[in-house]
Length: 91
Image 1: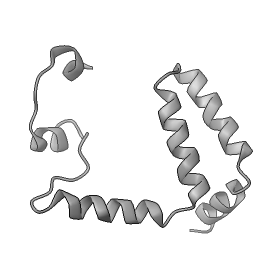
Image 2: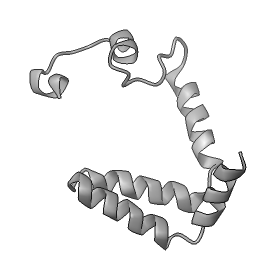
Image 3: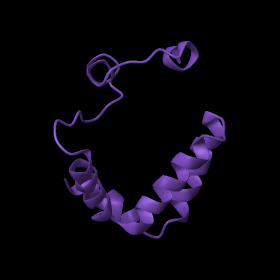
């Protein structure tokens, strides 16, 4: 909120280490890193990825309580939900 309200510009190092809002600081090609992340996402279940994206995008337009209810509805509407639960429990 501070960054939004003050408009202060921060560097990648501060964003990563102080604020924890950067996952990776790339020394090389950002395209290579983006392709790695995209490949990881593409290896996941299509339904789960699409529903996750829908939940995150919808949350920007809702209160926290509404967003949590929406996410819960998406979860229960997915036929793949049991696969995800069982894979987590078996790890």
